[in-house]
Image (cartoon, rainbow, N blue to C red):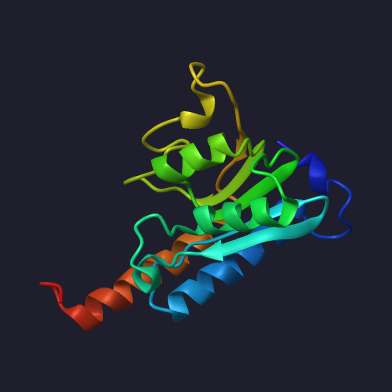
Length: 168
């Protein structure tokens, strides 16, 4: 699926361009010793919200990258309805984040690496396609998936090295 909001960007493919900005957020999370997931919300060709995981820093189980980016976008646009926006996230959204995306009426989500343990778009659940819900979300997965996945793999590999096989 082509993202109609960004179809006129010259040069690079638009999904990859925006996903690279989400990857920058993920790298900030890694530098803060947070699970490296990043997200941005784009409206009318500009970033209106961004975030990275901050669960440890904020001691908040809901402080996922998508939740923070959605909150910023809503504040920036002055509306909880994020119609006309595209959310880019480096990891397939979990059930909580998929629920927030649905509630915010985000029409398009582009995600990077699949999440076989918690993915709610394609891996474990298909919430965006559930006919019982009153909103549908178009989605494109596996954009820069190798790069997104490698960042997560390297983070957890380093964690295991410093914590040892039995954890902290």
